[in-house]
Image 1: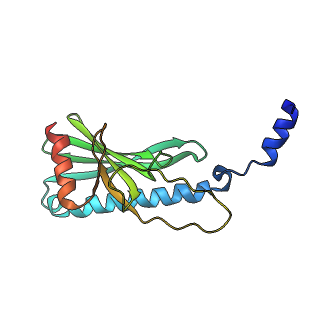
Image 2: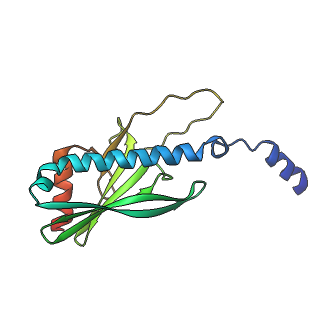
Image 3: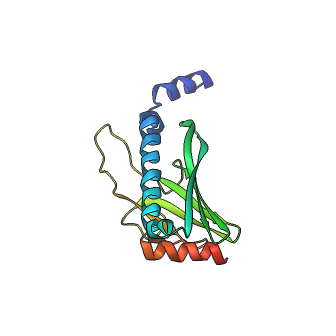
Length: 170
């Protein structure tokens, strides 16, 4: 088989998942999940904000991902007792998750990932797309512990504040 035959073969059989994905839909879904995450954070800080103990401020943030391109999102700055904690969306084209947001301060970083709600460790699932509807995954925000033995902890108010204290105290 010549290189020309091989090129023709590749073009003929190029039906990977990458070609079947609606990247605008994927981006919009990701932006929706980011907003849901920020809404959750705002809910947990409602009383603190009301009492003037914290401030939450959003800033435009530009992401650039393969196949999706450049798009506008937002990062959140949380100001607490002369410290700033920043929540930064990392992206949706990540191996083993649907997306990630990092919480960072000068003292540390915690990763929040959007994963299958049933997973307790990072996992990848291989699917062969046959043109039929595949089972939808129930996505949930989780806290990813540091490597090498990464665990996924369900995100709830208590776990969130534990993670926050980790980045505030180092």
